[in-house]
Length: 237
Image (cartoon, rainbow, N blue to C red; front, side, top):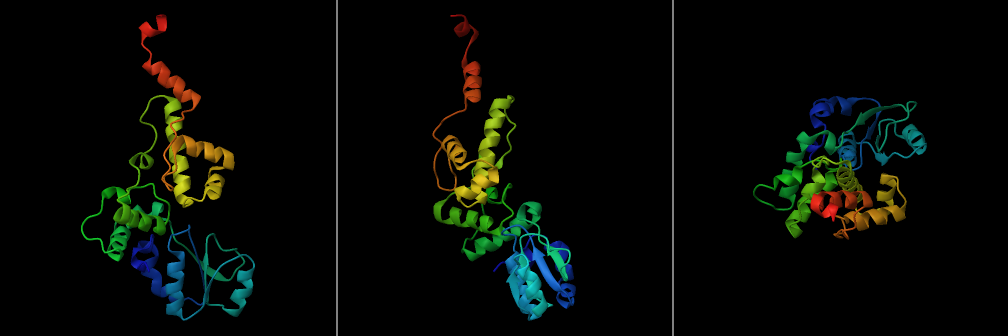
């Protein structure tokens, strides 16, 4: 279990942990997937000696009647009419200062000694402790590192076509990683059909499943490359 002091945002709420435990209300703790919500809720429930549940809709209201000082783990904000105190945990991408400590802890769990490659802690990374740990495990077992081009931002090229192509690749790979390879979820994240997603994967590859790009380029990029590779002499023949 990840130590509470390493969770994103601990610098803000950690100093008030004793007050949170002493409050008479139920605690509604929410945050992005993998931000440590369940870890925090389980620990606070143990310290309060109260039960906890995953909050789901109207069932939470009935549960709170029976457990007025219980704890609820949720993905979104609490309804305003519920009698509880709410705490939101930020994602890893909102608290990059938490990354070095988390990586060191995960490396210790895996028995890794010595410094880690700096790229393991490079953003963008989903607001997700599991993804950070997966980076450490993949590097330990397979020697795999996050793709450098996926971590950078498009914009190095001057022309719009090339930049759009790079942005498309970055967003596709980001969605696939955040969905842990689930292509239905990745398509939903991108707002495209499954057919469109498979066309994008063919064009840019899938870093999660290790599928290489087929090398297909959109017409706008091919046209740009042809223009760049054509000399004035070739154009007059």
